[in-house]
Image 1: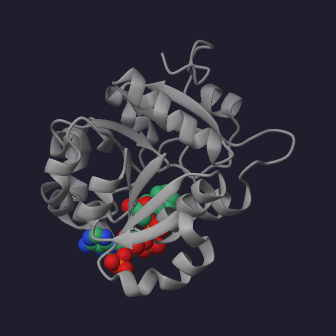
Image 2 (image 1 turned 90 degrees about the vertical axis):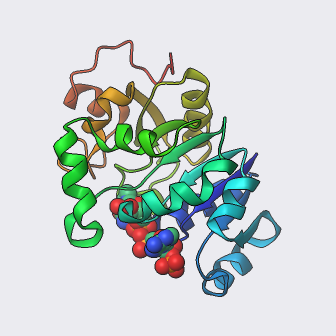
Length: 217
Ligand SMILES: NC(=O)c1ccc[n+]([C@@H]2O[C@H](COP(=O)([O-])OP(=O)(O)OC[C@H]3O[C@@H](n4cnc5c(N)ncnc54)[C@H](OP(=O)(O)O)[C@@H]3O)[C@@H](O)[C@H]2O)c1
């Protein structure tokens, strides 16, 4: 699969590495491609870099792993390239980094996933890859014994299935917690945020019933 990843830092770079290792092709969308040359050297022919718009156009699927505060500008830039595509949002709003948008999202009371979906009309937004601490992403993929969970929320079944498959390919157990109206349960401060939880622990912490087995229904 061709995956466009906007942002190549802790989260974007680590996801890209895991997906290239799984046999996918990744194009990172960055402001300065020179800065990702060491990562591209490491990943070999499965990885390339260009602008955010180039990455969005390249990907069958697009993942955003930049600062939440940059979302409005990036969304405008990539909008024509992501029509009909699945876009996973790994970004979290933090006031010290992202400024006013943090308050704006909080005031909606509906979760960052729904806010992001509002920025991306025509795309199938899935909130995913945003609750895991990046060192867990890097060091606990394919954890022996019991995989760590990759919680996600979205409204489109096919989009959820595609992102769940990518979570599996990265070495985690996908857990669909519900539609985007539940995406607030994935935001900073939620009981599962930045915890090294298994799927069962995620379901227990969010009081999900046992139908939510990452069944992507
Ligand atoms: N760190 C974690 O444990 C963690 C866990 C889950 C989710 N997240 C979320 O994932 C996102 C990325 O976090 P991170 O830790 O990977 O950050 P990071 O290491 O600082 O990487 C951020 C990436 O975004 C790019 N970027 C910065 N400003 C940008 C802009 N204005 N427009 C487009 N791209 C820009 C950066 O590239 P250049 O500056 O080189 O252009 C860099 O590639 C954040 O929203 C964060 O809240 C982080």
